[in-house]
Each structure stands twice: as C-alpha cells, then as structure tokens.
Image 1 (cartoon, each protein chain N blue to C red):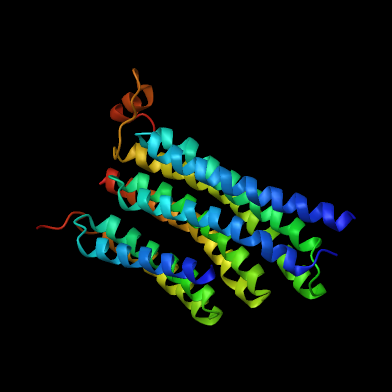
Image 2 (image 1 turned 90 degrees about the vertical axis):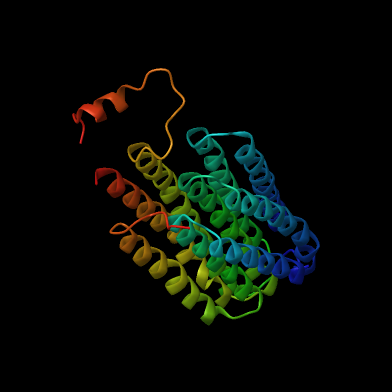
Length: 81
Length: 124
Length: 93
C-alpha cells in the first residue's frame, strides 16, 4: 500500500518534469518545477529520508521559486519558438 | 471507554476530510473560470486540510503509543492546522487581487466599476 | 487504549481517499490554461499532501518524519505572495 503511493508520486513527478520541458510560458514552467519538488518531498518521506526532505523543501521549493520569479520580472515572459 | 470515543471521532473527521477533498476536485473541473474556482479552493483547503489535521490529534490521543511521540504529533498537527487556517484564505485573496489587476483573466460580470476606476487611474 | 493494529486496519482506507484526491488535483494542475488557475490548484494539492505526510508518519510511528510538514504548509502562502507580486509588477510596467 505504501509502495503504491510512492509509485504514484514518482509517476506524477515524471509527468511534471516532461511538461516543464515543453512549456512555452516561463512563469508556468517555474511553478511546475515547484510541483515536481513537492512530489519528490512525499517520495523521500516514504523512503525514510527526512534529512534530504528538509533540503528539498528549503532549496528546491523556497529558494528556487522566489529567485526565479524575481528574475523573471525583469525579462520576457513568453519564449520564442 | 473515552479513548475509544476519541479514536473514532478522529477517524470520522479524517474520513470527512477525504470526502470533501474529492468533492473539491469535482468542483475544480465543473467551474470554468478562475473567480468561481475560488469556492472550490476554499473547500479543498479548509475542509480537506483543517478537519483531518484536527482528526489526527484525536486519533493520536486515543492511541496506544509512546507518550513523547503523542506530544510531538499533537503539537505539529495543531501548528500546521493553524498555519493552514490563517494563511490559505489570505493567500487566495491576494492571488485573486493579483490576477484581477494584471488582466490575466477578466471576470464574467455585467458591470465592472472597479475596472473603470482602475482605467481612469483613481485607485492605486 | 486503542491498540496500534486497529489503526492499521483503517489507515489504508483514509490514505486511499487522499491519494485519489492527489491524482485528480494533479490532472487539474497539468491541464490548466492560465497561471492563476494553476497556482490555485497547487494550493489545494499541497494542503492535501500535508495531510498525507502526517498519515505516512503515523504509519511509520516516527517523529522525525514530521519535520517537513510545517515548512511545506508555509510554502503555500509564500508561493501565493510571490506569484501575486509578479503579476502586479507586470501590469504596472
């Protein structure tokens, strides 16, 4: 049961990563990268690694989203195809 | 006797929270616009987040585990429930303000007085 | 005191409810058109995942696994503030 939950979380993280790759809107891509980190946090909790979990929540979620969205206010939102 | 009552009250609260979460997902697909989806988001965050965390407190109080473990679970659940109850309504409110002012989505209303005032530059 | 095996009997039912909700919220996040709807769905998704993480920690009977719950719950508010600030700055430019 607990392994089924972890497999579902890993699959959703993979789908999120593929969507980040093909996204033309950069702001949506930054937020989707945050979603991927959220699923990794659940996966690391199921695999009993709380030290990696706190690093993922601090860096992958907090710092990444704040810094990239701050940089994006000074640039273009949509990238050219 | 009292621990059995506490345990089943907690299980019922967590179950109600899960059912409300699934109802909120149905609401996210039924509503077609951002401003009406705010109702569904409130059900998903308060009904699906606050009630189960209070239910976990009741479950742990009636369960046969270590005393220190009981204290840690109770404190963390109450603090997380307080953060969710205070921060999620404020967050959705500030997000609605940002989306309205950036013309990301226009609301489907007949008369929009705030939009007219913003066009004339009266409200900053 | 209620024994731990009684909890193990009802815990799969509760966790499956939140797992189904997690899958449907993820589909809503992945198929949303605008940035506002996506962030609104992420709010509900992360609150759902906080409850799921507390239930996983209760399954393992470990207090150390609760360390990620409070930062994840406060990240929801941080994401709302940052995205709203980004949108308002883009309008005023």
